[in-house]
Length: 370
Image (cartoon, rainbow, N blue to C red; front, side, top):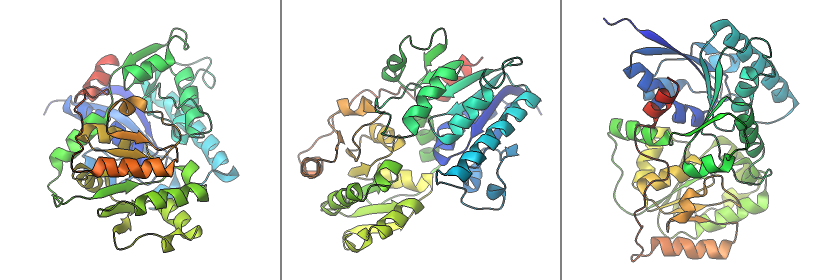
């Protein structure tokens, strides 16, 4: 058996979305017979995904809650702030102990903030022997309040990272020359590899009749009862079957606002949150997507599915240049008109070149890291 080498890459992950974007890099390292360090901070419980994605379990779990099988934490309050600071110093301790060549983190979550802080020059002014790498850098909504704190975190992560890997030319151009002499490279979007791997491993087939798929979970929407009313109004107006898998926080807010009584149960199929494989199966067979998340906008481009984005701003505007993505800005009448347009028998999705590149992005990332 060929002896396994170590890549000297340390990957810090806390959320499901981060794992979905990073597991193809882990798969590629395994293909190259190279080991890596995997730190899980515990922002989400990811236990069911390691085997599903074919990757190893974390080398380090930094949350006792995750070890006990809890769903982790989601509220932003004083208690979680203290937990974040404590976890950041745990990550720094491991980085110093393991002495990697690269510390890789993804996106714009609290986990990203902890990882970039732990790996930065600020907390390691005298002994920084590694390069910190921000995967999926350069995204901008150009509005600090939407989404908050993600827009702030992604800007901070870009500023303090040694290497910024962007998913598109547009996101690379967002940074411009504002980060001094940092290395900024457009490698493409790893979601292309994620979708390719998961779909190739899926054996499930969804019925071919027309239906819509919904995903709503962003904090700026959930905290706003008026927005949630408008979102339910739009979903109720869709005249084909609608699959709506609910995140736990979304279900809680719908019940809190009394909106569960106003959902058209005859047309809308409510379920618990799906795993990524099942969700992709539903998405790939759908005729319409209604969402407020980021990755699903990218998946809309991959599968060429019409997509209604229930937000005022998006950090992924690449798809808005197509004829099948629409940013609602909560103009409900225009949004309803657009859903009818997308579902009309004469509507044709224009084929476009994917702005996020081609399958094989994970290999591009590792080539850039040497």
